[in-house]
Length: 257
Image (cartoon, rainbow, N blue to C red; front, top):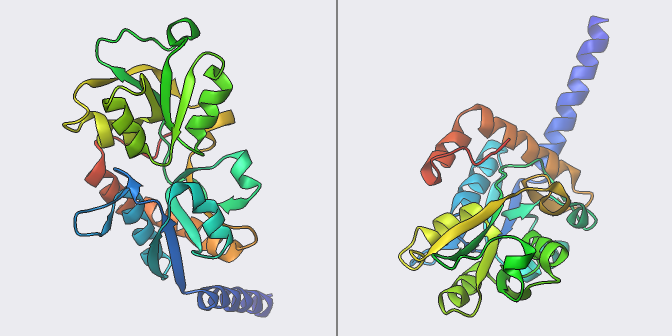
């Protein structure tokens, strides 16, 4: 029995060694235009929560990682075309996306919210929203939610980046914004440009539109990388690394329920 157990353990270790050696260099894709999760600083360097988490996961998984910046509209096609091996770009885990890519477990989960101009009096119901224009980033869960729930009463302007939507809001070309609450708060409301903007309405978290939280997308069938990243997520959650990165950007637990 002891000999059998030893044989099994040796096989497991050999298998693990094969997994580690099979892929030690990994390329990560991100948008670089979605603060505080990912952005490019004045020196041209990638910064943000996604970037720090991705680097920590690579360290925990003993992977050598490099980053590629890709516009959001083409980020899944870029993965499928093998421009990079995984997407670390605040991508929510949804049934629709699961048809094209695989996902790790979540690494954070935050709700969506609307933003209005202070004093505008707009409320989040169909009577108040009737005839209003809402800005949203294109090809996102927020656009899908907006079209499915309020598309019959609002005009929807979809943008290539959240920054473009924010700029049109400032210019008065849209009445409201809909996006991730943290991206809106830290990337817009709490900036000098956003001092006349405020949240309105409830948090939106329905999994039918907003999925199971934010995960890392990998190509279908790349189980070794997905499993390695899942193990790394568990590792940084348990050893305090995740908490340190969280505290660098937020004063609350971004991991969510």
